[in-house]
Length: 252
Image 1 (cartoon, helix red, strand yellow):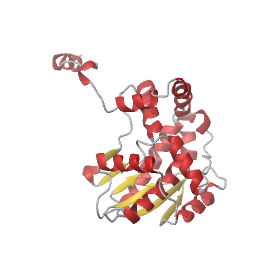
Image 2: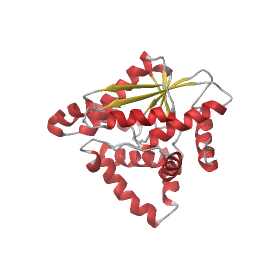
Image 3: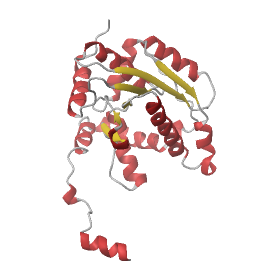
């Protein structure tokens, strides 16, 4: 049996502990896209279930976004190799998203439809946790996406409760760098499935990633510094209007 690398195991364990991601009796749905991140997460959560002092159930879920091609069967093959219970569903979400608003905001519409369907499936299958394979770089990129294009300061939370606590989103790889995930996936013989979306190579996230990559290469500590800053918020130094100013704005 292949052991989880010590450093990666420590980072996942730290995230699990700090954000209270799993509890005894949880039923966890894993959102599997076919990328290396969600596939490695599936393997990790299964490994953890065999040694953890708590008991939880796993269900891997893959939504085919309707772009055509062999991706559906390829993802199914990878989940079968990991040996997890699975649920796979074909949708037309991708096509609808690309054609919405004359092709504008396709990524937004696609992500929203996928997320809403995952929420529905979690409820139908009595899952109280929904696990995503987002890693450290994903969280940093989301921060800059929201800053540049959304007009707000926010990122992905490692743990987020929804619907009054009936469903909790968890990101066990939140503290892990992408390169560690890729290395583990290669050692496990996991074959990631390419994203068939025609917008994948030209998305806003890709632009943010292309901007950040040379900065990371220039300063090896930069990634860790940015990530740490997301938990070191100094709200007093942001543009928070005083109550009197807010009242004036509402009157105007």
